[in-house]
View 1 (tube, rainbow, N blue to C red):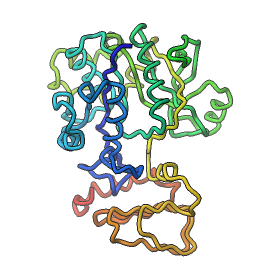
View 2: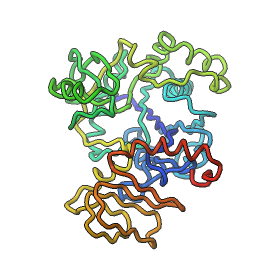
View 3: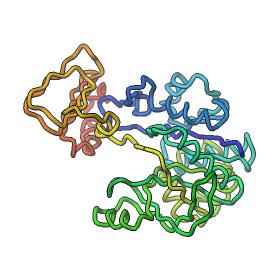
View 4: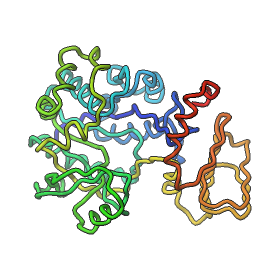
Length: 352
């Protein structure tokens, strides 16, 4: 089988995990699953097994996080840690990393892009899935995306509709993509699930470097041409756009491989409830004394501190570095809005 060159997308801020996630300690640097390893380290371990060792693993991150990535992943070749001078969303990141890999390995190299903050339970099923996608990408002009099996009608994910069957690889069926749909309303999401033909868009892609470079030249020349001509010096002038909008929704080479492993994108504090399932009334990652409290998620980074609650239900309470966050579980998406208020006031700069 062709060798996979995995690239970890590790430039995100993870603001919805504030106050634990900060500028120089974003979500991917945190350990949230109780393993003692950060999400970035767990992702690198998972992908090293597919890449024949850490020597072929790459990371693309922001310039301000590059030193942290090197500390977290000392086994990686420093030349394989690409530091963006500024974040321009995933399309420039994918384009630049693909150019670098093509320069190192040639345009026939099979490249995979994987977010740093995903939780995946079954390594064996994940490996089988990636091997199937790699087989297709190595033999066809294909951009393979992994479709996450939806277990509820989410309005927070994009959806991928399966089109015509494209064959079976490593005993797994792969389909042409009929269409991508951005985050739908609840009624539309319910209709999608009823058809059995839709997956969540997990933001993972596998393809040959030359295939995507050619497609970028066709559909996103304003990104790929400046990078080819000026390299990293062009970065600040590139459009800020996701790879979904820039390429995946336009290309005719998109395929989807429905997955069969448990997955979570750990989007906000509510993810801890999914990770730490149990019969207890609350998720307690803290020393907690509670009275008439249920459905709460409690976290403190200092185990010498105590969180005391009385009469609370369905709340998140987080204590870290001089900040206490208390928020209803159904309003955690609003943390990013509060951060904008804090960012506008210099008194709070130490807490960001």
